Length: 120
Image 1 (cartoon, rainbow, N blue to C red):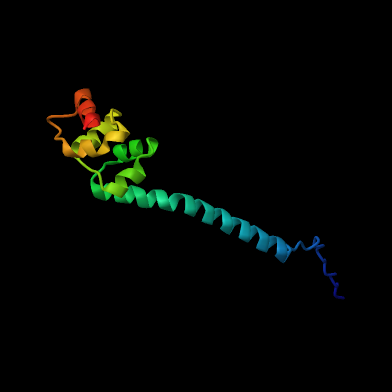
Image 2 (image 1 turned 45 degrees about the vertical axis):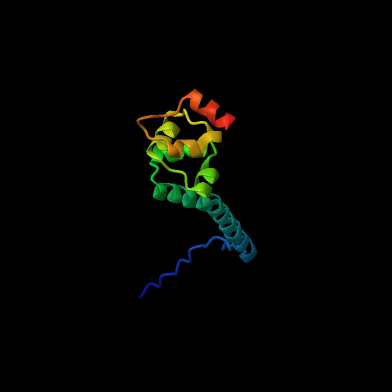
């Protein structure tokens, strides 16, 4: 006598499917978010790279961004050691950037120099 064993069927739960439209929507939203972040960061990275090529270090670049001098400096290719030092010190006067490039670090600029420049 052989005993037959009954096959036990395991009950499977309901199959869950993700709708294609929802999956596509999620992918599109993720792509838009990634693109938006890229459009914001890429110009900043390009400007920082250009400032590094001029000779500025990371702290000076950070201060330039804070004072919103990036476009003026890049447009006119302003760089001197004295200008970089004044930017990191926070003593730069944005309306006289061209003067900072003409003066050596040993001499420096005084209020009298700015006054004389305004008179000329």
